[in-house]
Image (cartoon, rainbow, N blue to C red):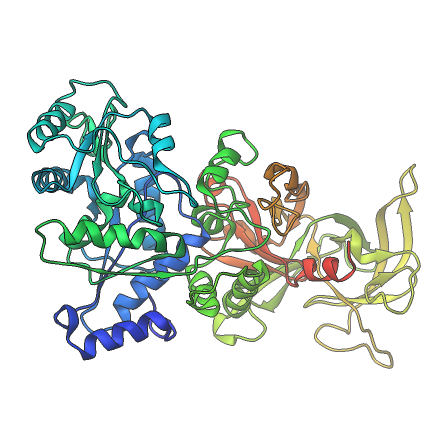
Length: 562
């Protein structure tokens, strides 16, 4: 992560400071980011990434691992692994090499399970899933011991080894920890440690037909890697006693400290992997990297920057208090970033032809415009000016009140970085819609106001013959409800925003965008911030995705109660 972006002090750093003062963990700070490779990372994961890697960066000799907790091969794939590694690297985070996989520890996990059996701490249970649920009890009633709970060590060892050899059908037996069926914490009521699954694993192939559960694998993986502070979200708080129990009951030297923090809840957004996968599988979006998706791949394709996401995560902070963050904070972060460094360009989204009748036919004038009005170091760009230009349809009215600061029939307006023009005539089609404007220009107004009169309005434009044909995709929030998945009686897809994507195929851009870079954000003047779609660019197409509008239009909509 970049210099100057260290995480703000928070309750976790306070714990670590005390640990270092007491020389706990030998003065080391070692964290990890442990995603399950069963989907693409989303904006909620960015908070955890920034925290884990930020903590490691904040402290001298701090380290952070990237580990895939790959215990459920039926829902995992190499595609997800590759995308996650790419996202973490894109955010600017460097992990302690090599990339780890929980599956690399399957042999050790199996041996620790044998140890638990030998010590009378685990047993093979043959209840069906429905029976196990009935025996488990509820939040108000204690569970009942399984009739298989008192199997001998010898019988448990024999059954567990035979499970691993594939002698039993999937679901016939499980290995359970022997803890306390009357515990008020349901997670401690003899949780499952291993289950039989005949599934091909993306890392281990067909070596195993028994797979360890996440709650068993996670603490041991942390300990094997020498993790000092295991940072996770609040939903794992009730799992912490099991995390500690596993490590306390096997012969392992390291015992990381699990610390929970509040996850990122963002309004107008869904971050459940299951629901995001539904959007992809049922074709509500084009894929995991659809620019409307809250995935890091989608945000990257839309034009969000690592800096803006890190800035956003730093702004929301790290606490133990659950809450909902306004997505406008994320949009503010990208506006702040792009306003500083996005070069300017002009693009007419809804072209209306203008003929400047007193400008010489066939003449093309090369005007010079700043690449960025507040940053001279970014240099200048050349903008062709000619007799025929395009302006935006929204910038013209035949008649308008004094608040309309654009082009009006019979009145003047300034063209950005060019001349003042006056509209004298409107040509319409059979439907009565303007299709061409006849204007005159004041040749003495380049870079200065006309003598004796003041022109207030400024509009953008492009020269017609020199313009570049581009497709512009106006992306907006995917949902039009602030809590799309909070309505239990209504499917979350009912709140999809029908205006989340508007495709404009006839936009006209200034000539400089013919050489637009696929990694360069642009501010289309008076329109918003745009980013050349990298996938379309690789196919030779000029398709610009709107990253964010210049202003928070949703705030105005909500203020009106619409």
